[in-house]
Amino acid sequence: MPTILLLDASNAQAQRLAGEADTTLQVCTRGRESERASTRYRSPIRDIAAKDVVQRGVLHLLQQLEQQKPDELTALITFASTSRLNVGFTQDYGSLRRSLYDIPIRDEPSLLEALRFTNAYITECAKEMFSSPVQVRVFGCRAGDVAWRTR
Image: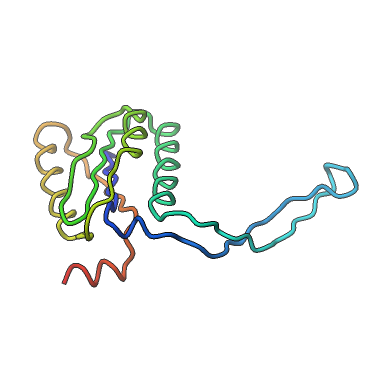
């Protein structure tokens, strides 16, 4: 099934994140590999931009697609107040990964405009490329932001 990665490239992605995350640490006790104990602790999330978290999530998804569905057509669209087609449908996961590092942070997000743009792109491509459903994966926007911005 063709996939579109729809990434929030708005100024909200420049926001710095901080907090804590649950981490489980496997510790080998008494020097024996067979005697492991799990220890849970809270690890701090160091100062990191939201864009970096989104980028890591997309890179992980691309890795999964490349391993499990290497022939899958995938496209990358970014959005802020306007949308851009960064990479059209391709099976070249390397070009998709490289383009993630060249996404500029822009103005306010508009998911509604991004969905309209994405729908137009799917309609255009469907005539020539495929007739199967297309999945759209949205990265980087929060439900509260979307409700407020699309009114």
